[in-house]
Amino acid sequence: MRTLPLLLALLAAPAHATAWDVTLIDGACALISDRPGQTVTITHDPAIPLYTLTATRAAPWPGTTMFGIAFTGGEAMTITTDRQTFSDDRLSLIVTDSGFGNVFLGMETNTLATLFTDTDALPVPLDGAAEAIAEFEACGATPAV
Image (cartoon, rainbow, N blue to C red; front, side, top):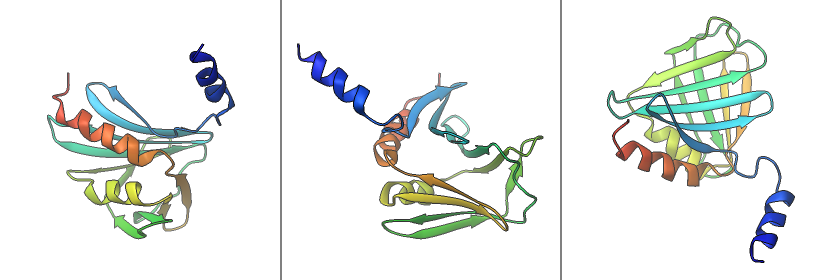
């Protein structure tokens, strides 16, 4: 009956105990945090190679001239860009780049990432991110199917 204690522990755990998951989406590796009112997805297709961060929320993102991520709760750092785009309904903010090393470092060494624009912010807890990044990087070492 070893499974009973494990089952009880899983049932007692908060619903978002592992807030970051790794999966394949259309052949690309995806690192996903899906919480009420917000989904943050980072995808990487080693065949391109290109990383894409998509931050989706219930309210439209305002017009902006910049996007940034402020990492806090560890080795604080801030990353900014002016290369953001939006989905047609403006519910998703999208940033694409050939490298995300600083983003992953921030996610691994901090407890909170605040995604921000000129006038708005979206706090994203990083619990479970370090473990998921290791899995995500291993996914990237395997050719996309």
